[in-house]
Image (cartoon, rainbow, N blue to C red; front, side):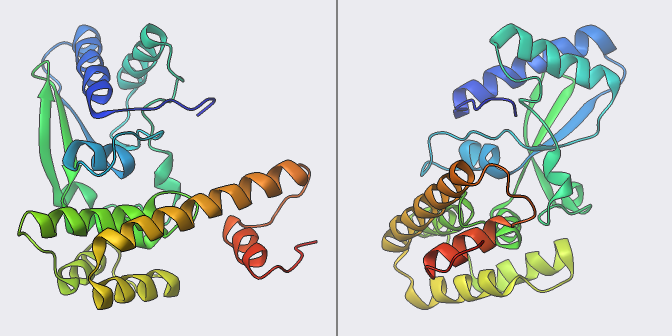
Length: 235
């Protein structure tokens, strides 16, 4: 995105409602559209532990009409043109099987079908990404925490089955260690706060490095964070 927008559940619903209207206006009623909200947007519409996100990521079966409708909503509400995007398709958390495991959220204008991701698959996606400077780790704990409070606990075996279904390959070592530690502890409230602090620290490390080394290329975010925590120079 060209600039950050803070999405809430209410604003996401409002933008999707307008998106449905614009798509129907351009495309008529014969062809329906389907999108899957993932990441922070999926967290917002399913859980209460977060109240905003700066990302509205989705799996979009793109067409020129859909893109026009997305851009129209952007212009109307002063949003980035890619306020709703599928850039995450280029990341490790994407899977072609998402449409097979998605669950329905809402339909807008009787033509835009919006889907979301069930808890175990959302956790699997967050673990496959495992970013220490976003909300990946705290989101995992937050989901487990809310399900526990509702007496609907999620077992580790369920998560690992979801990982296999989506990716059919092992989790990154750091993510596997993290989820094992989470279940070994079971203190989701404390783990959530600790994870958020780790993520804030990671974000600060990345921002500081970027500001101090604007011309440096080819250094991964994970490497920046790891070396900073070990107090080793990258250069």
